[in-house]
Image (cartoon, rainbow over all chains, first blue to last red; front, top):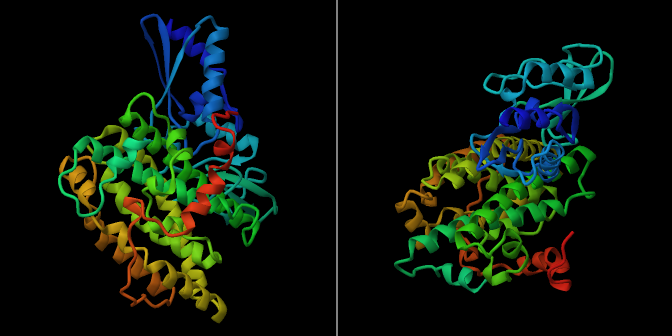
Length: 152
Length: 267
């Protein structure tokens, strides 16, 4: 039952980065079965992530479609989400999508790679971008502006 | 609503109930972030440049997210009937317990950055300490908020330095911002019976213990920015017990307008 619920949730994507699923992102923390009911635990990327309500609805909808009616979604803050939970596949798809993926959160930031021409010579335009998780960058070689997924 | 007021023990009043103090403490932290988020939101579409508009909105939404978690927790401690929305939308000015600093008007960009620097430097120590709270929910919120406070501080301290160590005009305005906000800083570190009760219970932290780390951070930034540390000893307080500056009522008037005009309205 838990396996089938997990399967159903593997198609739920992050509404702001539709190339990644909530499992890829590390937003999906746990799936359990309590008294025959599926209980899903999720964690926000940032405290004010405006996509959390939509993700909760999508989780319930996906489970409902798979035959699990009345699922419960719990939101936890601890342990605090980190970009280190992102899978390797997720990082690769981010790059292909045009977003430079995060570096490991615990080390000094290495060079940010341009997702267009792969140059390592890039400049930060702003630490704050179109969503809480991204910084705005520009490539010094090809001149393209791009988003960088900040490590946290 | 009325029991929320009763839980805000006036300064100098002895013996407070630990449960009441716990709820009031969480509410205060939520109020600080909610009011500051609302203030920062006033910059949206008015920022000095597009990137800065986005930066202020990003900071505001982090603070708002933290406020929602804190107010939801405070409401839960009050009982199953209360919600975060009741606390945000249906309390009056006298029932709000935020610091006077966060309700101060935005002024020019330098005033906003001075206010932000003072709060961010405080939050760095506050959230670090609260990660060890005996209240697991509060500790979880603090752990997350700390990560966000780090880049908020990086942003505000960078601007204060750039403006202070800038042109004659920018330096004068940055100094004016620092001087204007300074009188609201001691309130962050002044413990009252609520703080003492939660600190003793291991739930909260005595704010007076956070002062020296804050002071070191602010001294370092002011020195880098070539700004003078204000010498005016005058300090204003009262926000924690509901005695606010005249600015909060106007802010609440705007923030609560929809819910007050159409009670119970939902999306």
